[in-house]
Length: 297
Ligand SMILES: O=C(O)CCC(=O)C(=O)O
Image 1 (cartoon, helix red, strand yellow):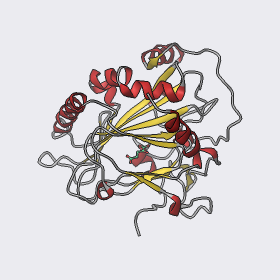
Image 2 (tube, protein in one colour):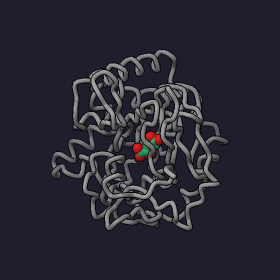
Image 3 (cartoon, helix red, strand yellow):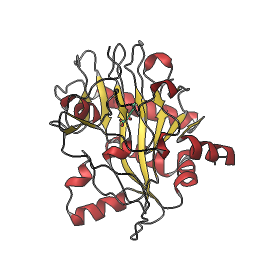
Image 4 (cartoon, helix red, strand yellow):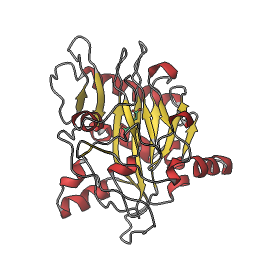
Protein backbone atom coordinates (compact mmCIF):
# COMPACT_ATOMS: atom_id res chain seq x y z
CA UNK A 1 0.00 0.00 0.00
CA UNK A 2 1.19 3.51 -0.71
CA UNK A 3 1.60 5.96 2.14
CA UNK A 4 -0.34 9.23 2.22
CA UNK A 5 2.98 11.01 1.41
CA UNK A 6 3.53 8.86 -1.67
CA UNK A 7 0.01 9.55 -2.94
CA UNK A 8 0.43 13.29 -2.37
CA UNK A 9 3.81 13.22 -4.12
CA UNK A 10 2.28 11.47 -7.12
CA UNK A 11 -0.64 13.92 -7.19
CA UNK A 12 1.71 16.91 -7.16
CA UNK A 13 4.49 15.64 -9.41
CA UNK A 14 2.84 13.11 -11.72
CA UNK A 15 5.41 10.41 -11.06
CA UNK A 16 6.61 8.13 -8.27
CA UNK A 17 9.35 5.61 -7.60
CA UNK A 18 8.22 2.51 -5.67
CA UNK A 19 11.00 0.35 -4.27
CA UNK A 20 10.67 -3.45 -4.22
CA UNK A 21 7.40 -3.54 -6.13
CA UNK A 22 7.83 -7.29 -6.60
CA UNK A 23 9.40 -10.01 -4.43
CA UNK A 24 12.81 -11.54 -5.32
CA UNK A 25 11.01 -14.74 -6.40
CA UNK A 26 8.65 -12.83 -8.69
CA UNK A 27 11.58 -10.89 -10.15
CA UNK A 28 13.60 -14.07 -10.80
CA UNK A 29 10.66 -15.65 -12.63
CA UNK A 30 10.04 -12.53 -14.71
CA UNK A 31 13.67 -12.35 -15.74
CA UNK A 32 13.75 -15.99 -16.64
CA UNK A 33 10.69 -15.62 -18.89
CA UNK A 34 12.06 -12.41 -20.39
CA UNK A 35 15.45 -13.82 -21.31
CA UNK A 36 13.74 -16.85 -22.86
CA UNK A 37 11.56 -14.51 -24.94
CA UNK A 38 14.64 -12.56 -26.04
CA UNK A 39 16.27 -15.85 -27.01
CA UNK A 40 13.19 -16.63 -29.09
CA UNK A 41 13.92 -13.59 -31.26
CA UNK A 42 17.10 -15.16 -32.66
CA UNK A 43 15.41 -16.64 -35.71
CA UNK A 44 13.33 -13.51 -36.35
CA UNK A 45 14.58 -11.24 -39.12
CA UNK A 46 11.84 -8.57 -39.30
CA UNK A 47 9.76 -6.82 -36.68
CA UNK A 48 6.51 -8.72 -36.16
CA UNK A 49 3.59 -8.83 -33.72
CA UNK A 50 5.86 -10.02 -30.89
CA UNK A 51 9.22 -8.35 -31.45
CA UNK A 52 10.26 -4.87 -32.47
CA UNK A 53 13.80 -5.31 -33.77
CA UNK A 54 16.56 -2.73 -33.34
CA UNK A 55 19.18 -2.01 -35.98
CA UNK A 56 21.90 -4.68 -35.99
CA UNK A 57 19.70 -7.51 -34.69
CA UNK A 58 21.04 -10.98 -35.51
CA UNK A 59 20.69 -14.58 -34.40
CA UNK A 60 24.09 -14.36 -32.68
CA UNK A 61 23.40 -11.07 -30.89
CA UNK A 62 19.69 -10.26 -30.49
CA UNK A 63 19.01 -6.52 -30.42
CA UNK A 64 15.41 -5.61 -29.66
CA UNK A 65 13.73 -2.36 -28.85
CA UNK A 66 10.66 -4.09 -27.50
CA UNK A 67 8.74 -7.28 -26.81
CA UNK A 68 5.15 -6.33 -27.61
CA UNK A 69 2.21 -7.12 -25.32
CA UNK A 70 4.14 -9.38 -22.90
CA UNK A 71 0.91 -10.20 -21.02
CA UNK A 72 -0.20 -12.00 -24.19
CA UNK A 73 3.12 -13.85 -24.51
CA UNK A 74 3.23 -15.41 -21.06
CA UNK A 75 0.37 -15.61 -18.53
CA UNK A 76 2.74 -14.75 -15.67
CA UNK A 77 2.93 -11.11 -16.84
CA UNK A 78 -0.84 -10.93 -16.51
CA UNK A 79 -0.91 -12.80 -13.20
CA UNK A 80 1.58 -10.34 -11.76
CA UNK A 81 -0.39 -7.18 -12.51
CA UNK A 82 -3.55 -8.84 -11.19
CA UNK A 83 -2.08 -10.11 -7.96
CA UNK A 84 0.99 -8.46 -6.51
CA UNK A 85 2.07 -5.34 -4.68
CA UNK A 86 1.70 -3.58 -8.03
CA UNK A 87 -2.04 -4.28 -7.93
CA UNK A 88 -2.26 -2.48 -4.59
CA UNK A 89 -0.38 0.52 -5.95
CA UNK A 90 -2.74 0.53 -8.92
CA UNK A 91 -5.95 0.62 -6.88
CA UNK A 92 -4.40 3.13 -4.48
CA UNK A 93 -3.94 5.52 -7.40
CA UNK A 94 -6.84 4.70 -9.74
CA UNK A 95 -9.56 3.28 -7.49
CA UNK A 96 -11.17 -0.18 -7.38
CA UNK A 97 -12.07 -0.65 -11.07
CA UNK A 98 -9.07 -0.81 -13.38
CA UNK A 99 -8.10 -2.05 -16.85
CA UNK A 100 -4.91 -2.82 -18.62
CA UNK A 101 -4.62 -0.71 -21.77
CA UNK A 102 -1.44 -2.25 -23.03
CA UNK A 103 1.84 -3.76 -21.90
CA UNK A 104 5.32 -3.66 -23.40
CA UNK A 105 8.78 -4.73 -22.43
CA UNK A 106 11.22 -2.13 -23.63
CA UNK A 107 14.48 -3.98 -23.89
CA UNK A 108 16.96 -1.28 -25.02
CA UNK A 109 19.96 -3.32 -26.11
CA UNK A 110 23.44 -2.43 -24.78
CA UNK A 111 25.70 -0.17 -26.81
CA UNK A 112 23.22 2.35 -28.23
CA UNK A 113 19.71 0.84 -27.74
CA UNK A 114 17.11 3.33 -28.92
CA UNK A 115 16.07 6.57 -27.29
CA UNK A 116 12.37 7.13 -26.67
CA UNK A 117 11.68 10.71 -27.71
CA UNK A 118 9.84 12.96 -25.25
CA UNK A 119 6.09 12.44 -25.29
CA UNK A 120 2.91 12.28 -23.24
CA UNK A 121 1.09 8.93 -23.35
CA UNK A 122 -2.10 11.00 -23.29
CA UNK A 123 -1.30 12.19 -26.81
CA UNK A 124 -1.56 8.54 -27.97
CA UNK A 125 -4.80 7.65 -26.20
CA UNK A 126 -7.01 10.53 -25.03
CA UNK A 127 -9.90 9.42 -22.82
CA UNK A 128 -12.96 10.82 -21.09
CA UNK A 129 -10.85 11.51 -17.99
CA UNK A 130 -7.14 11.29 -17.21
CA UNK A 131 -7.15 8.59 -14.49
CA UNK A 132 -4.55 6.60 -16.39
CA UNK A 133 -0.94 5.78 -15.59
CA UNK A 134 2.03 3.65 -16.59
CA UNK A 135 4.06 1.36 -14.36
CA UNK A 136 7.68 0.68 -15.34
CA UNK A 137 9.01 -2.36 -13.50
CA UNK A 138 12.80 -2.59 -13.71
CA UNK A 139 13.95 -6.13 -14.53
CA UNK A 140 17.62 -5.10 -14.38
CA UNK A 141 19.21 -2.25 -12.44
CA UNK A 142 18.60 1.08 -14.16
CA UNK A 143 21.39 3.63 -13.90
CA UNK A 144 22.25 6.96 -15.54
CA UNK A 145 24.16 5.06 -18.26
CA UNK A 146 21.61 2.58 -19.57
CA UNK A 147 18.87 4.94 -20.72
CA UNK A 148 16.70 5.55 -17.64
CA UNK A 149 13.22 6.97 -17.85
CA UNK A 150 13.12 10.75 -17.37
CA UNK A 151 10.03 12.71 -16.38
CA UNK A 152 9.26 16.40 -16.10
CA UNK A 153 7.46 16.91 -12.78
CA UNK A 154 4.15 18.75 -12.85
CA UNK A 155 3.58 18.42 -16.61
CA UNK A 156 0.60 16.13 -15.90
CA UNK A 157 -1.27 19.27 -14.87
CA UNK A 158 -0.30 21.23 -17.97
CA UNK A 159 -1.31 21.27 -21.63
CA UNK A 160 -1.03 18.39 -24.03
CA UNK A 161 1.80 19.46 -26.29
CA UNK A 162 1.76 19.07 -30.06
CA UNK A 163 3.08 15.64 -31.10
CA UNK A 164 2.95 16.44 -34.82
CA UNK A 165 5.82 16.31 -37.31
CA UNK A 166 5.76 16.55 -41.08
CA UNK A 167 1.97 16.38 -41.13
CA UNK A 168 1.75 13.20 -39.03
CA UNK A 169 1.01 12.26 -35.45
CA UNK A 170 4.65 11.55 -34.64
CA UNK A 171 4.28 10.35 -31.05
CA UNK A 172 6.91 12.85 -29.91
CA UNK A 173 7.00 16.53 -29.08
CA UNK A 174 9.30 18.91 -30.91
CA UNK A 175 12.30 19.56 -28.61
CA UNK A 176 12.18 23.19 -29.82
CA UNK A 177 8.68 23.63 -28.37
CA UNK A 178 8.92 26.62 -26.01
CA UNK A 179 6.79 24.69 -23.48
CA UNK A 180 9.45 21.93 -23.25
CA UNK A 181 11.72 22.53 -20.24
CA UNK A 182 14.30 19.72 -20.24
CA UNK A 183 16.32 21.34 -17.45
CA UNK A 184 13.44 20.41 -15.10
CA UNK A 185 13.67 16.69 -15.92
CA UNK A 186 14.23 14.11 -13.18
CA UNK A 187 15.94 10.80 -13.90
CA UNK A 188 14.34 7.66 -12.48
CA UNK A 189 17.06 5.15 -11.63
CA UNK A 190 16.64 2.14 -9.38
CA UNK A 191 17.37 -1.47 -8.59
CA UNK A 192 15.83 -4.45 -10.37
CA UNK A 193 12.42 -4.94 -8.74
CA UNK A 194 11.81 -1.20 -8.27
CA UNK A 195 9.04 0.45 -10.25
CA UNK A 196 8.35 3.86 -11.73
CA UNK A 197 4.84 5.24 -12.01
CA UNK A 198 4.03 8.05 -14.38
CA UNK A 199 0.75 9.84 -14.98
CA UNK A 200 -0.67 9.59 -18.51
CA UNK A 201 -0.15 13.32 -19.08
CA UNK A 202 3.39 13.47 -17.66
CA UNK A 203 6.01 14.39 -20.26
CA UNK A 204 8.69 11.70 -20.37
CA UNK A 205 11.41 10.20 -22.53
CA UNK A 206 14.67 8.30 -22.31
CA UNK A 207 18.14 8.49 -23.86
CA UNK A 208 19.90 5.66 -25.73
CA UNK A 209 21.47 2.86 -23.71
CA UNK A 210 25.18 3.66 -23.88
CA UNK A 211 26.18 1.00 -21.34
CA UNK A 212 27.19 -2.62 -21.89
CA UNK A 213 24.13 -3.83 -19.93
CA UNK A 214 20.55 -4.44 -20.99
CA UNK A 215 17.94 -1.95 -19.89
CA UNK A 216 14.86 -4.05 -19.34
CA UNK A 217 11.74 -2.22 -18.21
CA UNK A 218 8.34 -3.90 -18.21
CA UNK A 219 5.62 -1.29 -18.77
CA UNK A 220 1.98 -1.77 -17.85
CA UNK A 221 -0.30 1.06 -19.00
CA UNK A 222 -3.51 1.09 -17.02
CA UNK A 223 -6.71 3.08 -16.72
CA UNK A 224 -9.56 3.55 -14.31
CA UNK A 225 -12.46 1.64 -15.87
CA UNK A 226 -14.57 4.80 -16.11
CA UNK A 227 -11.96 6.42 -18.39
CA UNK A 228 -13.23 5.43 -21.84
CA UNK A 229 -11.00 5.88 -24.88
CA UNK A 230 -11.86 8.71 -27.25
CA UNK A 231 -9.45 7.55 -29.92
CA UNK A 232 -6.14 5.78 -29.85
CA UNK A 233 -3.04 5.52 -31.96
CA UNK A 234 -1.43 2.22 -32.89
CA UNK A 235 -3.03 -0.30 -30.55
CA UNK A 236 -4.68 -3.53 -31.69
CA UNK A 237 -7.80 -2.63 -29.67
CA UNK A 238 -8.79 0.03 -32.18
CA UNK A 239 -9.08 -2.51 -34.97
CA UNK A 240 -11.60 -4.65 -33.07
CA UNK A 241 -15.30 -4.57 -33.84
CA UNK A 242 -17.85 -3.88 -31.09
CA UNK A 243 -18.24 -7.49 -29.89
CA UNK A 244 -14.55 -8.28 -29.94
CA UNK A 245 -13.86 -5.00 -28.15
CA UNK A 246 -16.29 -5.85 -25.38
CA UNK A 247 -14.74 -9.32 -24.96
CA UNK A 248 -11.28 -7.77 -24.99
CA UNK A 249 -12.11 -5.11 -22.43
CA UNK A 250 -13.33 -7.80 -20.04
CA UNK A 251 -10.14 -9.77 -20.58
CA UNK A 252 -8.17 -6.64 -19.72
CA UNK A 253 -10.05 -5.98 -16.48
CA UNK A 254 -7.39 -6.00 -13.77
CA UNK A 255 -9.58 -5.23 -10.76
CA UNK A 256 -13.31 -4.59 -10.23
CA UNK A 257 -15.88 -4.42 -13.01
CA UNK A 258 -16.35 -2.61 -16.35
CA UNK A 259 -17.92 0.81 -15.81
CA UNK A 260 -20.53 1.63 -18.42
CA UNK A 261 -20.94 5.23 -17.34
CA UNK A 262 -17.80 7.13 -18.40
CA UNK A 263 -16.61 9.84 -16.05
CA UNK A 264 -16.25 13.01 -18.09
CA UNK A 265 -13.56 15.46 -17.01
CA UNK A 266 -12.51 18.81 -18.36
CA UNK A 267 -9.15 17.70 -19.79
CA UNK A 268 -7.08 19.05 -22.68
CA UNK A 269 -7.12 16.73 -25.70
CA UNK A 270 -5.51 16.54 -29.13
CA UNK A 271 -6.36 13.77 -31.56
CA UNK A 272 -3.50 11.39 -32.55
CA UNK A 273 -4.04 11.85 -36.29
CA UNK A 274 -3.09 11.40 -39.07
CA UNK A 275 -1.21 8.15 -38.42
CA UNK A 276 2.52 7.95 -39.10
CA UNK A 277 3.62 5.80 -42.07
CA UNK A 278 4.66 2.98 -39.68
CA UNK A 279 2.75 2.65 -36.40
CA UNK A 280 4.26 -0.72 -35.39
CA UNK A 281 5.61 0.69 -32.10
CA UNK A 282 6.46 4.04 -30.59
CA UNK A 283 9.96 3.67 -32.05
CA UNK A 284 8.56 3.11 -35.54
CA UNK A 285 5.98 5.91 -35.17
CA UNK A 286 8.59 8.46 -34.07
CA UNK A 287 11.10 7.40 -36.71
CA UNK A 288 8.74 7.05 -39.68
CA UNK A 289 7.07 10.42 -39.00
CA UNK A 290 10.52 12.04 -38.85
CA UNK A 291 10.18 13.34 -35.28
CA UNK A 292 13.06 15.66 -34.38
CA UNK A 293 15.25 13.97 -31.78
CA UNK A 294 16.03 15.54 -28.43
CA UNK A 295 18.85 13.05 -27.93
CA UNK A 296 20.99 13.20 -31.06
CA UNK A 297 23.18 16.22 -31.53
O1 LIG B 1 11.29 2.79 -22.47
C1 LIG B 1 11.24 3.95 -22.09
O2 LIG B 1 12.20 4.51 -21.56
C2 LIG B 1 10.00 4.79 -22.21
C3 LIG B 1 8.88 4.02 -22.77
C4 LIG B 1 7.72 4.82 -23.18
O3 LIG B 1 7.49 5.93 -22.75
C5 LIG B 1 6.81 4.23 -24.15
O4 LIG B 1 7.11 3.15 -24.68
O5 LIG B 1 5.73 4.85 -24.39
